[in-house]
Image 1: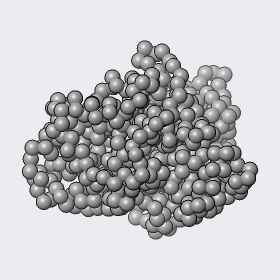
Image 2: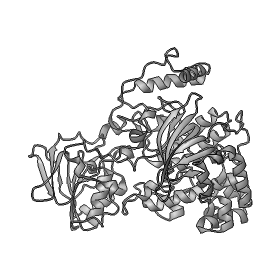
Image 3: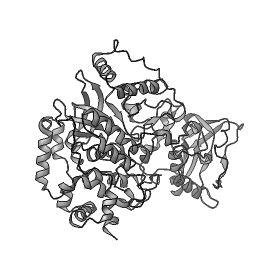
Image 4: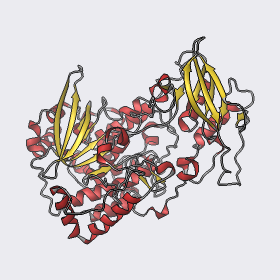
Length: 577
């Protein structure tokens, strides 16, 4: 295999820091210490000094793992013309810093990123490697034990529904599950549908290669974010040591990027229906094959519910799915609103004639109550709903499911008995709604008052006056007002309202990246979607810092990582939600 093919999965990430590969680790530490300056004295940040450092130079020097082999090849082998073609579009160095003097006096970091999962790590890479912001000016806070904690909490059998495939070197596109151009989970893991633990390993390894691991503050939960009178943010955090001891403190930054994701914030409200508190959310399951008993009732029939049904069936357990929509019959042009081919294929396998036990699929039903049965176990009551509208696409080569699918309107209401607590497969509330509601306005809420400098607080008044002096920001302000008045429906109902740069319309300086991003009917719930907005947010922040971003934006466009024209996107969330 040629050098280009062996290295294309990591070349683009390492290229901007190629000059560091031969540097001693002590030199890198000295450089980081000089850049961080006064921040070392902070009691919370001081703990970062002892964090594991697996930067490019450290990996190459220590020769640890597969990444070190790749970096050694990068350092020692010749770069052939093919490599230069693959590397086109990357920013080798960002020399023009504009008016940014690189100092963050009075704050602990220029940018605090909340969350060290796919969105947080991917965005931080774009910010530091493509836009050239020094990693010492970025701090990631993660409430879990390390990078990718949410993925490590997945049920053992759960897999990515979007396929990974390393196509770089041949097309402009790249691995659907990659968070950074030039990296590929398929290449790193040799897995088409990675498990949660595998993907966490990918993120952790990537974080080390680009020298961001030492900028991750683990076991650090954000309690509240408030904007101070000087325009900087006070980020109140609770830090937890390995021995369980806790301490609250305040970190300061010029910008906050919310990237905490969704999995750690399941939709399991006890008020969803009578007796909902008796159920177990599917995110609490560690392994379906290890679940006690041999039969389960699953409430919810989208990806989570069907995945649970498939894995229970393969473990020899009977599963009954109660769904408000027969998602297995939905066909739309937006992959966010129909079952993924990977999910549908597995469902066909376990519902085929001859497979046992075959899951029972029941839709459209609305669960109204769960109660303990006098004879033990639980009774689940559900009501049949009106028949769904015809599928939006009538012509299809899709094969129907051969398992009986109960979907007849007019039957008597359903009462099912189950020995085990029913499983909620109802999705996730998400971190924005659960932990950051004070930072965002949401679609469907009352529209905010028109911006009026005379009634604004002093910081907001100053901001509005500044915006008024800048024609570009005046246009942006108009777009914000339009978005705030929008009444979203379908999947976008209750979504956080964002500007065209994914900035909060409620608290300027707070940005959102990840699967919770919505624009009208467009849902950015997959990695290959939301990663294309990293450059938008990085550009806004770097411009706010006074940096020249022209070259970085051009590089992002060449990598398909700067999606600012949403007219090319297809969204059908209102048709199925």
